[in-house]
Image (tube, rainbow, N blue to C red; front, side):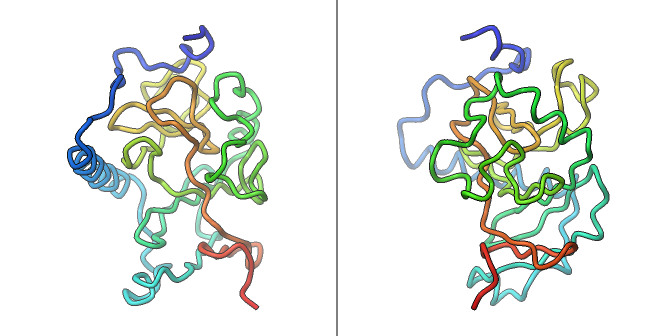
Length: 213
């Protein structure tokens, strides 16, 4: 383990060296983590009920429209798409500046690993516009939902050189404010960026990469 990677290893946290061998046990463990994680995020970040389509549309995986004008800088909301929590974070200039300082600590800083980052988001901020970050709020380890840790430094129990990000409550995986996972964490990959596009400056559509037709 390199010295660099240790800078973002939480003191007292441990990671399982070996995953449960029993597939059913692993499934139920992941399910339990996901349920508890989603509940935690729901308490901290309000769901935007008015953004949600009907139950029938949700069941069909319909795209979800999100109004960005109601999201102050430095905060995020959670929408629901295909039954998954989708985070929309409005990054401040300080948050954006912090993303370029930590590449050496990240497992996949350029989002080269396939399957988690669309081509339009393969940049430092992993988004179409640097002030807006959109991702599926599910850890790539066992499916828990990480919690926001936006404060820089150690104010929220994170390392002193923390630039803001997310902490998975189940096994301690850490992600930056672009959903990039740090080195030597239980989570193997960055958080998933879903398909989305900007309808206009104040609206995004989650679930499609461009307008239909």
